[in-house]
Image (cartoon, rainbow, N blue to C red; front, top):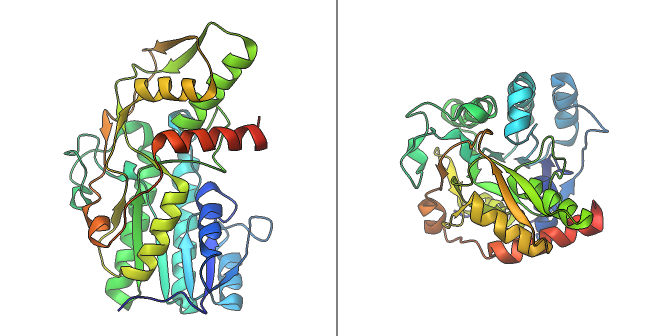
Length: 311
């Protein structure tokens, strides 16, 4: 039977992040009570603090959107943080939710959980069938552990804990720090700075050949609410658009959106990451959900948010 959010108390762990804030915005249209707890209240890596808060507030629905995240550079220089922090965050929340009697929990994974050479598009059953992409394996290992933890609690305790795997995300609330950002905000900042300084060119990591699928965070938030209402199963569920673009074409598209007319220079000494990452979103389609925000429209609105809130 469909699960109703009406009258439920809902906690989005990581509510101030890009995914968390988008999920909270989407929940505003649901007839539910949204609980708030940010890093100012307690550290999600602190098991005792998480247990205390959960025991007191007893949220009926939990969305685990909290994580230590970053792009290729951040993953390469902070592997211990990416593994340790994320293992603690997810295990603390999932265990505390079980003890507090949470009715429904949704854990957010990432498309990087799949093998580097996975058959494309990547279906849910591709998990653990081959070696991971070395540039983000620390984050991937932690996310795989979270997925399996939800499966274990479902098998052992009958907990209605599910997992969702979105592809590369972007949108309002993104991280625009060049030292830790993902590809879209990084390219957006570089294009903006090049335009502002009157530069003739901007540098881009890698060859530009990798293919990527991008999902607007507001589309993801809508998909998460749909999953909470309609899905209760052991397998994690992919969330994507079904469309992909090369990094080179993405860079040109972002340059046009920003208004930078100079040359794009590709630094081939830098890593590309996985050659291709496209999700098979058939399960999500069967559940009755598809994305609605085009990449072009999403990039324009994201750049406008950057200008108003960061630049």
